[in-house]
Image 1: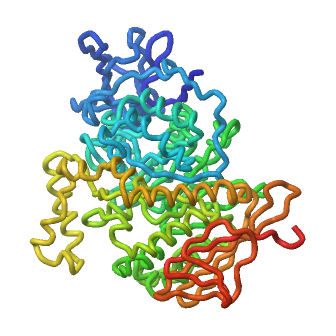
Image 2: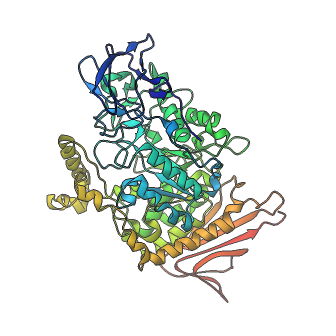
Image 3: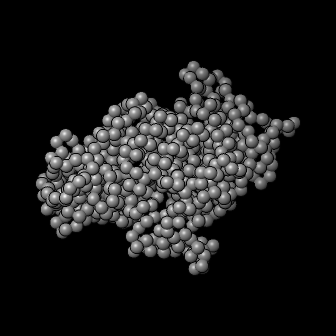
Amino acid sequence: MKSIHHMPFGAAAHGNGVDFALWAPSADGITLVHTPAQGVASSHAMQRGADGWHRLTLADARHGDSYAYRLADGLTIPDPASRFNPQDVHGPSQVVDPARFEWTDTAWRGRPWHEAVVYELHVGTFTEEGTFQAARERIGELAELGITAIELMPLADFPGARNWGYDGVLQFAPDASYGTPDDLKALVSDAHALGLMVLVDVVYNHFGPEGNYLHACCPEFFNAAERTPWGAAINFDGDQSRTVRDFFIHNALYWVEEFHLDGLRMDAIHAIRDSSPKHIVQEIREALNAGPARERHVHLVLENDANQASLLARDGNGLPVAGTAQWNDDLHHAAHVLATGERDGYYADYADDAAGRFARALAEGFIYQGQPSAFRGGEPRGEPSTQLPSTAFVSYLQTHDQVGNRAFGERIHALGDPALVRAGLACVLLSPHVPMLFMGDEFAASSPFLYFCDFGPELATAVAEGRRAEFGGFAAFADDAARARIPDPNAEETFTNSKLRWRERGTQPHFARLCEVQQLLDARHRLLVPHLAGARRAGSHRCEDGVVHVQWELAGATADAPAKRLHLLANFGAQPATQAAVLPGELIYSSGAAADAAGLRLERGAVHATLEDMAGG
């Protein structure tokens, strides 16, 4: 089976050569520079149409050839829609014929979202080699653990040899430091054979600061009237925005169709400036529904600091009208305060009643559903979320952001109270939310995850100085010597120190954590997942002296089976506690809890969960 996403942008190989197309409405005199795989470069004037497209067909161009566009001022740039840029973001693009790859996952139809257990990974630090090929050799262990979806941090070509991925500038080109497009396809094919979905993180709110030549060839891509932290906003709603919107819609379809991906995670959509009648997120969803989602499950996960529940709404059939789910930072922040006691920055919004707020996040998804946020100067934040199913929320104790944005990249198990970290993790894995682990969570990895990049010298210096200045407002980094200890993001050792140490997995105490996670995921898959598909409402919660009690109404495993009620008790208090009544239903997990004559005794950090048949079905 062959898979090709046909689009108006870029280079399209076919039996009669290659069609080249560049949208640059304000540019004239663009020249295609073509270099055969074995041969010398030649220049060819492109034909400019009235619609701003520059086109050319070369009959002797082939897969593997290099090409670039030379502007009238002499600047030579890669193709903004390049499928592969093996010489990095400043070099020429390479013609890729996707029909050359033979897919073997013909029977794959994806997995429904309620089965998702997500594992976020960064390809460059997931293994020592940092490649797609090396990742293929490890994903079997994830499937055995109980992971059902891997989420790859952004792959779009970024400057240099290492980057988190959020500085990508070539949206269609998997970064060459990880391997070729075919290597990525092989990884996806292997994952599907193991029953693993594959999602990729895409960044549609900005381009990176180095290697973005769109300002030079196509300023229409940006709207100077709308500003973002990265400068002029991408033009999703201004003059000539239709083609810009199509560029990103095609990008979403490209990853799903040409690479057989099972969905996308859209980074920081709150930073997208789009006042159009139909938000770009919804338009992408509709394009996916009209295309690949007709034949298989395709999911769209959002990161959205604005907590817009409206973008997670379901239609009359319970299907998402835009986002399938959203990363639930509210739950993370409450859990982090509980486990570590930290109250700086945005954690201040969760510090007054961290256990109660954690309980609300488990039950309702968002904590901030329109209330004022002190951290944001009293501005209201969020929309009511109780009408959403619990599976609309991806919940976690860590992400790349929450680890990597710390000065020294410490993971929560290196910072928090071990009993409370374990309790928080159990609550996440046993809740009806879609749980997510950040790579290494499953064995309490000792390696940090630091912020790293590989910019040119001038930008590299500015980034290093800016990062150290950013932490200057914290008491721990008030003096120059303390700030100097913060790792330089551009140093290669900052990157290599962030790589997972897989040998730890089989040693204590890491192996003990791995066994705990496997036990929790086994209970989840056997006892909870069959009841999650039809659940469509928030749960209820209460919290007293740090003891969290949350319950959710779930569907029956079949249409004629009784509905279920999931009970979850967890003690985040300072002392052991006793519940007067034992929870009803079948026990699905218990740690640190024991029944006695007084009721149910909960040690500090205890978690106890049962599944009850609801009266009357």
